[in-house]
Image 1 (cartoon, helix red, strand yellow):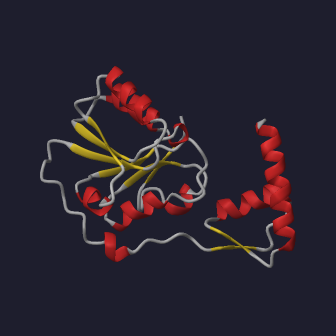
Image 2 (spheres, one colour):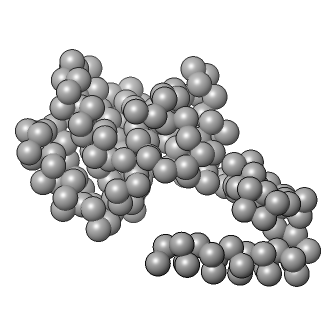
Length: 192
């Protein structure tokens, strides 16, 4: 079933690409994936996603509670986002005093909450659902974590965190290395 779906998607993409004057990609990674899928990306132009920096800049202040590291994740709660790997790492590592706020919702939320409880992380990990005041939440964070398992086309939540002055940690997958310059504006880790 997936093979048929992918085949139909590729045919549709070829037809659209053939008749269009140009396409916009949100990253070099997406542009290269078009070339991989179609054999050509000469019509593709890159325009990176942006954020309203006035909404985010100047919101981050140093945390008052220095005894804890305040981690934050913002995104959909689906398996591909890798939040389960983040929870596993926190359960194994247990070398720092932290709290983790998970902002977002999705079909994987209940399973992640159960997994967090099973790992005995329920005192340190809070699931707060969808929130509309992300700059305020980022203001309270020391570190933004982005444990995505898939090759994302961009990573807008990373840009929002960086605009807020919050350091980011993410896997070096997809377009993420275009967003994070390792050791300069965040940290890239290798996929596990």
